[in-house]
Image (cartoon, rainbow, N blue to C red):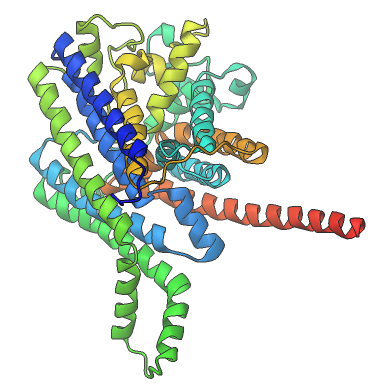
Amino acid sequence: MEESVPRKNVLWAYGIVGFLILVSVGTYALHEYYIYLSAYLWFGFIYGMCLQYGRFCFASAFRDLFAVGVPRMVVGIMIATVLFAITSAFVSSTGWSTFHAAPVSMHAAIAGLIFGVGMVFAGGCASGSLYKAGEGNGVSMLVILSISVTQSTFVDMGGWLNKLVPASWTASAAQKGLPTSIGVTDGWVDQYLAGYVWNQPVKTFAGALGMKDESVGGAFFGNAFVGVLIPALFLLAVVYIFWVRRSYLKKLADQKKENITFSDHLKGFWGMIMASKRTAIAGLFLGIACGLQMFVIEGLRMKFGVKNAGTILERIGFDFGVSAKGTVFDPGYWYVTTQEAQWVGWVMQKLGWNHMDNIYFGWVNGIPSPAINPADWMSVALIGGAAVMALLYNEFKWKAPTKELAVWAIVGGALMGIGSRLALGCNVGAFFVRTANGDMSGWLFGLGMIGGAYIGVKFFNWWTERKMAKEMAGFELEL
């Protein structure tokens, strides 16, 4: 903490921490089950601090790389993914992992493409927008709102959109035996999920090598080494060759260096890695926290004899919004977008729009009140953790969005919301967590996201040039 930080910032930081402590202690006094929600709260707080400290944003990473050729954040994210993979491998090998892999098919790449375009338009990814909201960024707040409303609306749409659904999806969804209250053939997203996505294979790198995910060999060699380290090194090598190598060679030429060797390139590669220390440090703590959260949540589930927080909520008398199979969204690790969709779904339900007649809410995740939703506590605390870090580093400032930025925030947030639901996760749930745990679908989403970011950056370059040309033309007319 710097000496120039105003005293009021410190007081506000203490106030946020004090409030979260009061919530944890006060709710625990009501019932010990609330410690389950507090576990989510404090891990969310840690994630917020790490994100703000490392400026951990996927949108910024690819925008900086494709627009101005600065690789620092992309390199940092790859390093963080590798570090998280090591932690995840350890947790998996103990048998205490709460991670579950996702279906693998091209839907993940297509969804990643849509999400990637959206995050560039919005100026922040799903997790980046949360931590930036903690810095007082009004644009990021609009992004979060847009993502949330879009998801909640998107998963409950039917009508004429059902005409676009292949008959094979409809038939397959109808055979899944879901309750009639879900109305699985009434919404196109339901048919997409039950009739297509659920039919796709679930694959990890360990499984592809004939190993079990929870075995030491499967966790460390199959998932961490083959599934994360090798692809990450390949991507880092691509970044070095196309974005760093030229400037590094110029630096050597300025030093009168001749006969460039492979050893020189290794030094340049290592220098690229070390230039991302702050993001790597944040990634290290994120990885440790994500792994520890799996331990804690699994331990609490064993302590209370439950498999999902839906049972806990029912035991303490909050059964509203619990899904038809008695569950709520309870991933057991870091996740971002689903809980934001839930609170909008809860509001809509209260206003009379039935949001429990679809798979996403009614069968899988539920729409419990935000006041007792474990994952919602995590997101709110994440914003709080980012705010504390921003206050202590004197980086907190309310920033109202301009009309143009507000439009981009809403459009970009909507695209991210659509991409998240098609992929069953965002840059955190569909890429960072899945990839680090050896899930093949994570890399598919990641490749799509990179492609979408490239398209988004190219579009923005065109848009900016077009806008400037119009302004200059107007200026010349005035002269």
